[in-house]
Length: 631
Ligand code: PRX
Image: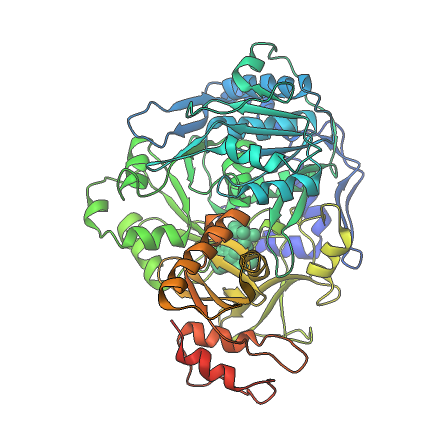
């Protein structure tokens, strides 16, 4: 399973393309299966229908926990670093984690959860979050983790879409010097969620919460009622493992579905090879488990490989901007995996903060979630890696389950801002607007994949047609990523950003339509259009053009902006608040009523010199007005 040189990478890549089934069958043998598969792959991208390891039976938690007990039962599986550096953290060995997962799995069973049920998890970054995730997997329940920053409305939408039976949450969470009332938010959500029969509440902040009789139970009380004996449920390779909601260019977020066998193989294979993980290394992925990065590279990938995974509850700037480096030294972190946004924000605090730390334990640095600009890449390389740690710029998506394009640490020659080369099993193709392949090097196009890999999404929950439409219909026969991409003279790939109406704000994926819908819910708003613009720290900022019923004077405009932000926070969550709101009298629309976002994007970028052809606009004069009022 392990690639150790560039020659081995090339050989593995070639084999994976010539005989993908044989390639992945060999990789999958490194896992524990209850029953072997009968066919490695069955697929077509038309329906789409993708099945890996057909007929194989397994439980992912046996692979992440049980099978490690004999050899590394006493090795740390999870190191937990709390928000407050003065609070004692915890270390859970594989044996302890196994014990706790089995116990909580029994709690779920006691509360009526059976195989196939959906469980919503809305929790702080504490070990219990990973325990809840694994406990679901243990008994074959499907977890749907919702990031702790989402609003009650967003939780309700996700719960209702998946018809979750149980919610696992905590009283509150600590984020820097803030306390976030998670249970209250869940209570607000549940007003509109009839499918939920039970809420299990873990104690973290001891903030007062309402506990509804017959519905809400305490995590700690429940644990007293169960034993640690919980045999793993036998799952089919293609049984659902989890749903994770993500934003697209239209409508509400969709529930990306991953299944047990292929996801496990892919998350573990990529973890091992991209980070060149060695036994006993400590891996610190700074993402939240509420995102795919946390699913694959805090929980499943590292644990399937028997690694030690660090979970950090807090934020990079609390109590000061040296927190990541404190943690690195305190726990001798060997692999650090973070987002360009975090790097850019920490750059702003200068190198003195970093210089106070040793950082000699670091061996590999990773970047994920958005394009990393050259300045941030070099700062990371010089100041954190001290020019001795390879940087892996890993490109992938919620839908891909694991990393698709990335250097292998220390093996692939890196180049700043380039995700470099596809991993074995990954067959990228660049196409033009009409879906025609763009061959050769030194070219740009829309990034697609022409062959499935084990971690590819199988469907979008409850709406397979939406999955087909979104990913497989734009260019028939191909999986369309939604990203634009450059392939340079060396055949290296650089992802240039989304080509659809999806924004990437601080590495968070947000649909412009979602933000517009939220803004439009605000009283007095007639219409809005949202675009992204380059932002020094966030990568992209959110720029909203808003038409109101009545013209606003300066004071009212200020207040209304604040109200609109409050509305967006309430509807989606604070991460979707616009950075800039410009009130306009009209939007540039074509005669067929389509908003010309290209123009709005240019104005938001501050580049009004060449707005292109505006003659097809219904009313070209609005463009002048918008330009004049640009922020
Ligand atoms: O635009 C790409 C960007 O993030 C999108 C996927 O977002 P999400 O599903 O939330 O998953 C993020 C974590 C895997 C992609 O379509 N993206 C992700 N990684 C990179 C990136 N853009 C450039 N370089 C990357 N390394």
